[in-house]
Image (cartoon, rainbow, N blue to C red; front, side, top):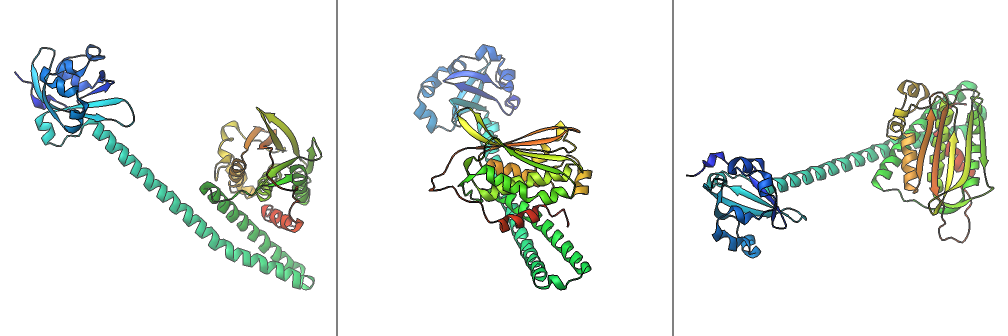
Length: 394
């Protein structure tokens, strides 16, 4: 008496490890009457007729046979005619033994491992499509940003030329218009620069150019360059360092962008009459020295549940305040990516009503150079500061 082939459900299988039964599917248990604990640890030959043992003991024959025709018995010794296929799954030492009836083979039923492999292939294809879509998005963003940056650069140059050539002849009203044009041009340049840099950092397209530099002197110069903006809100801006100098390998432009973003953020959220402290020190973690840069403000503070969000692109803890201050939510995202590109880490300590402290740790090491490099020209820094602090109009 045979079992009805229709009873054989999809997914009837046995999993072997090192030739022994590891587990069986629910449909196998239902059809044969064998509970998993009754077959676990046994060989599959114990469930099959004797004349198949020789084939099962010969791996070469198994590899040549797509399906082995045999009988399988239920616990009452009633045989069921089936076809069995063996499939090695991935790099594991497991074998999936898929059990089919003649009808199920004719209907094109897939074995469990075949279904798994197809699922993996589909997942790989979807990941590849997503990768292509993300690259297309990044390429489009870079193209649009470049196209927008070109006319803005021309407008900025034209304004500077007018101020240089006609400054003494311009009335206060015209100067006011030019200042407005300059401010909003710089705002858009800042946004575009942030988008470009984030996209390039994401794509690994920015080359980090390290030079041996005095990080204390560089940080002090950057801090000094923005004092005029801090004075607009009567903010006291203080710089301190535990040593007069500390030479490390730095990408000057990246460090400049990073610190200016943090300072701009601090001035933006510190109330009138408040205080901002910038400090440099050396710390040690494990067997390595790190330069520790701290920017502490007296702003509104950031809720604990929003502290991770602010490092994401367009992530802001308070959207109402962000609209009032002109924030886009890209600055801190860029800072984190720059810190990561420089091999460092960034931390945040903040409590509501008590301000925030951003802590950056950069590894201290030197590149092979003959001398310690000087910082870039003051004119270049002034231009960068003007763009970063374009929310403030003189």
